[in-house]
Length: 279
Ligand SMILES: NC(=O)c1ccc[n+]([C@@H]2O[C@H](COP(=O)([O-])OP(=O)(O)OC[C@H]3O[C@@H](n4cnc5c(N)ncnc54)[C@H](O)[C@@H]3O)[C@@H](O)[C@H]2O)c1
Image (tube, rainbow, N blue to C red; front, side, top):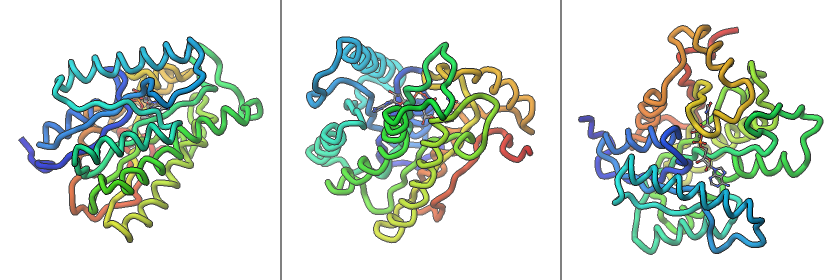
């Protein structure tokens, strides 16, 4: 067993079921001697005026998250609800960790949402995206890494020399085989935020901030909702030198980047079987 993360603790966001990429990363952290605390989207006391549909969605999401953690990581794993659209929910996560004297050595941002993408629906052209859809995708999928980092830093939960890692996609930069319109713009912002934070936090806290672009993957809830993603999976698999990367591959690259004392920051890594080198 590789013990490169022995004694280190990481917050892992974005697990909802056994197909979540963040789950593969959490398992790899464990297998390298690290510990994980997991957050899942769920209803909190800060949600107000929710419709029945929204309540049911949040409750089902948290139920699926809790069941997955129990089955895949064990019921002793610490879990917390988190909705990154609510400042108070983010603060509560930081407060809870502070109250338990937990010192984090980093966290994984594996969160994305775009309400203009719905399972079985054609993705809207950019000209039809509403202001609300644009800013919601931006808030959840990009901006959220900033208040989460700030809350953990303010409570002195996130230690100097920590490592922050975000998950991205080639659609942040390029027009891909399938429509990745509104969310592509949010991913571009996420990657730019990663670089800006890498500079600020490297200087101030010796922290590293990196992102990984992964192959298209239909095994997760987010991936399975994207129109035409299966065709993109097949196309990228046959056009990349090594074939598509698997969840194990992103997990291994993640734990490499989470290692303490690594002088790698502001990187946007490609874990995609080499697909990105194609013209
Ligand atoms: N599936 C792919 O093809 C693919 C490829 C490259 C990168 N990614 C990225 O990997 C990350 C994880 O995606 P995944 O494919 O594992 O899908 P997933 O559905 O398992 O993960 C997305 C997570 O975002 C969470 N989330 C959504 N809104 C939230 C909110 N308001 N607050 C807190 N959490 C919220 C969901 O609950 C879910 O756990 C995302 O950033 C995604 O864009 C996915």
